Image 1 (cartoon, rainbow over the protein chains, first blue to last red):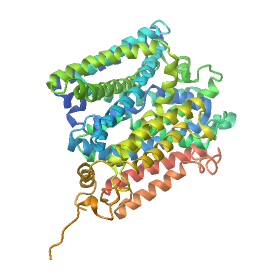
Image 2: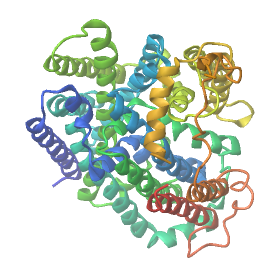
Image 3: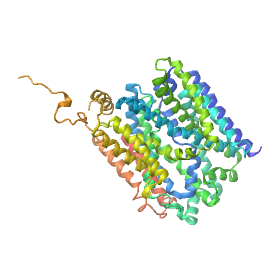
Length: 495
Length: 92
């Protein structure tokens, strides 16, 4: 049997598995908004663990990180700092978000911020930031999916057709089973992608160099410039290292699909365990991608598109079944992020827009139906964005990685009592100026003084938020006491 | 003689933009909390510039066959995870 047949068949087998899980999830689903959007706040450790790690790692982690090691060398091992930081953020901040969500019935990030800052303007701003800066991820993941299936089929399935098939499958199981379907498929995807990347990297290391240690020795002997920072192209400067650490930890955690996951935990202890242990998965995934990227720089130098190093090596040196298995793993990486973002955007639009402003007093079944209709709309938008090119999208994609970072002052103000209380005007002004600063430091004059634009924007945001809060009215005493009192009770109890 | 309490916001020590303060959540309150915070921050600084771009920035000596930069950072990351697990076990 030809290699492309095996590779494509394995991907479709994987897709079939996700659809079956979606159907099973549908049978367990109750017609209830909290069940449809938040898994009924009953997610246990294993499911939550695998959905968080699978959502965190997209097609970029699977394919793009190998390309980064290939081009810029070992500096991408900075990935360890942001993945460990994600664990610490979950441990310290995620648990507080969970406690407040449980106590006050929050479903979206905007619920949390609008309640504390007593402002519909905050709700609308957070909802817009949440959707705008993540909807572009749908485009990125959809394009990645189309590319993967195109590569697997040897060009027989075009990128637009592949994108359409995979988008429809993801939307179908999301509509069928809500967040439960997303979580269950993420379990499959999380396991599959981790095994695939490790097995693929080890097979290639043995095939090409005789083992991982021999691979390291070969790189040290032939390309030592790849084993130090800032790397052969001078990319990983100190400012870039720090900037990527901040934007790829806080910036991703503050995206709605990650924040919503905190609400869904069955209890606070589960989230603490999650925080302590997720870095094990997240960080160790970059060990095999380092082997692929650095080994690939020796085995296959001069690639025009470095991100293709993993599939290129597989097609050249690995058996067909393994190539199919691994490309299905790449599909899993992209789909697990795609379905989570589809779900998060559906949740924000259903809860923060439709339920709040369009039709406030309808039945739970009505909102579930509207949520499903919104998924169809997002599916169309995602497909159109992925098969056409718009100049303005290039700008928005550039900004999207650090867009959610602008929620940081507002969220920390809610979750960490003590010090000066931020105000609604301060938070709004901070977000607005932070986004403006992000545009300047990422698009107009990228990374001034070698520091990542996300860090500049965050500094501006904090300064403005604190400055404006100093001269404007804080939230009412009752609200501050209610919310901060709940945080105090949760974290310290009677102490 | 009965004392009359002023409304909270009228008390002279409360500034207009602030509410009566809770104890800060930015500062640990327990010995284990301090230990975990200091250990995590200290280790994290080892994984950031300037350490990464000076002390760690070399290929040799290799550690168990793995280049120095990569191997030492792997140890630091593992230690950081260890701190989180320790904090969990201690109920921080």
